[in-house]
Length: 475
Image 1 (cartoon, rainbow, N blue to C red):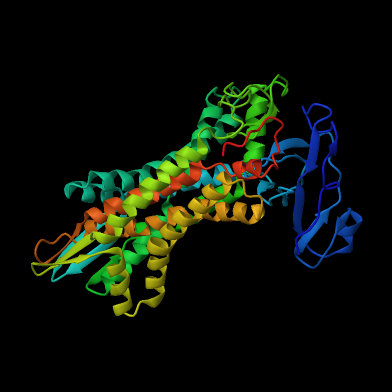
Image 2 (tube, rainbow, N blue to C red):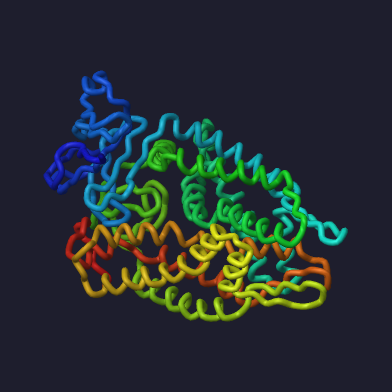
């Protein structure tokens, strides 16, 4: 059972959070924590619901509380000082505001440095090997973009290079760089910019998606030839777990507070509306377009031209989705004869080989997810423009899901990269990428950009439930 409010729910005047002007109406974030059912916890003021269940924290916010703007509904609320293991959620839409970890920065640094070492091993070591009729072919992660480039599809070469090599490497490097910089006697002036870039790169680092695509490629190849698993594939699995642990353990709130202390951030005073920085989460009064006093990112009440940009990107993705399904994504040449295959054709092939779980996985990621994402984004945009006030929490949850699952549609592109790199044996056996793969990769990227461009706070603004004293509904 998940329940509990830090302080009393609802709005009231309070000047407790640091830097919050008196008279600002505040809500309080919902705090959760997991703990064993033991009388000792009850004596500390914790309400126990059941063993290892969620408990309600009864501590009232104090002067160490900070004010945050919910990134999904725009409500301003106080987040009290938290203990390790506690989770702060928006009191209105349930969005995660903060997850407090014990020694979050030190542990994250250890994970990121470990990830860099594993990345070097995974990128250069043997990934997969293929033996057909006495011919042997091996490939590495770093060689995959070149396989597309030799086929003349430089667009797919850039996609694979960016999402499997550059983005993960830069993300881990920036994470380690920021955390090491905070430990120096004189912190570099670029820490805030480095952290902003790390946050932007996070959704584009697709190690876990590539690993699943490589597994699909391995399964398809094993049905036609002998496949050897290289050491790099095992290292890649360890890298995936390390990256997941890095993301899970990083406390961005604590990280930005540490950066602010090193930059000697001034108190959030100023003229203009109350604005929450999209990059670092700092709340203060300022003029839209002015730089944030902690991270130097431009302050925005809402994402500019959110509705128009989202519609444009969504329309482009919908148009490209047609050729992505009509044209073949690959052509398999065996003994001189070509066999074109579309996305649906690949699913049918897996079904013919009795690989039902894999067929469902590919169908869900490559067919179902793109369609549902297109429809879901259209529903969100239309309901916002129509000022719909019903089911706001459900629509916010829908946006959360759309934002999270879109990147997994890249499975087919990464599977194709492995197939093209391995199956290059002339007329005996070869895989030639098709234009359908280029269109499909564009669909995935455009829908991700459409989701990033859409500002879910506009749904609440359009329904008249704004959390900012100067926010305006764009719809």
